[in-house]
Image (cartoon, rainbow over all chains, first blue to last red; front, side, top):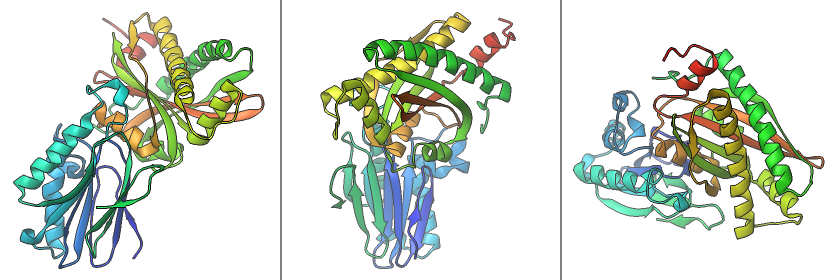
Length: 159
Length: 205
């Protein structure tokens, strides 16, 4: 099966053996949720913490509060069990540290919102690679639930 | 929501004209910085693009780029970024420092930040001169990273949910070398409507 690229604000799920990739995670957070035994996995590329302007309904993948329930629903539709879901997350960096904690550090807010909504949906967070000052590429292998994270100029790391 | 901030063809023409004036300003500022080294800058095109098109323009989401970001406040608010493919950033730094660099050290980063600052503020000066509006640029922030990571961080920081982004393509040439760069113009909540109204003579108050 060909690798599937998940763009900003998108949600993709795969049953069986598949590779889901999202690139260019800056302040955005990549959320991987999977049912390992059933080999069902999905990935969302979350842009902001909370939905606004009524966009949560039309573009749920953009916001942490709508992306996580939408991803869970999509996973259950293709055979995952709610009680077996686990999550791994990556991203939420601040690429412009010199500009301080102000406007551009939405990364931290995104990470906090993703953790909160995983908890609200009773999904255990198994691993994370978040914050810092570097952009990330995140790959989910749906058969195993393995997530690989890579930043420019660094070796890939498995989480 | 989609396209609410999408400029009309006439507005795009205006932005290009402003781009040319800004490029003129930037060229003279850069020339003095370059000690007579010849660096020219042109604005060949202005386009209104979707986010994926914008990242494609700079080589795709995963492509390494140098990005300089400046927030704009004053009579209008908005965000500007200057993005260069990493090869172009190297060529620019090399031609300014007069030596080959493989990694960006503090000096290289300062050069990039300053060039981005000059390019963006030259453009803002052109806007301010033509409209009489007060425009205040923030300090520049520099990131060298994946294009998608830089670009989406800027958009998220600005809470931009619009589907269209106005992009002013720029090109430098230095002693026969072509150096590419792109100025991104992201209007704030009130958009650049106010500019257009003033520039097109439709501002009734």
